[in-house]
Amino acid sequence: MTQKNLLAVASAAFLSLASAPFAFAQGITVEDAYLRVSGAMATSAAAFMVIENHGEDDRLIGASSDIAKKVELHTHVDAGNGVVEMKHVEDGFAIPKGETHALIRGGDHVMFMGLNKVPKEGDIVHLTLTFEKAGDVTVDVPVDNERAPEAAMDHSKMDHSKQDVDSSN
Ligand SMILES: [Cu+2]
Figure 1 (spheres, rainbow, N blue to C red):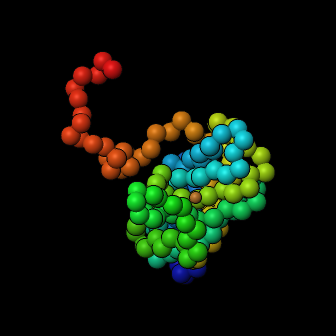
Figure 2: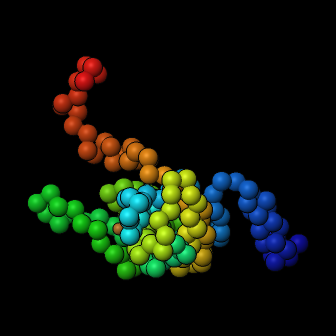
């Protein structure tokens, strides 16, 4: 079997996984994606997800969606005095081979700016992520405004010294 045929067989095997609940392209998988919209009059929204790179070293360099005029890769930076600001990350997020990059509340996220329409709870929004090597990966992102912050975030905010076993309050 030639190398080309081997690749064709490998691609076919991967394509057969297409019904699995995640996006797949060139070794990139996206899982547990959701979008948060701040309210009915919102002009922006933010998407969170877990990106896994099973391919070569790569970088998420851009994003787009038909529901927003502009979609940017953002992160949060500590501006001092307890102020945390959002910042546009021009270079995107490096995702080395074999690694997972989580977009979480209070951390890296995909920012939708200038919403053409405000999606409702449960709506599915199409988001295209552009990777330097893997190219475009389109993800179905459900609107989930009820979602609690990720566990990792909860822990950093949690003050264990004030925990009380009394849950009557
Ligand atoms: Cu943002």
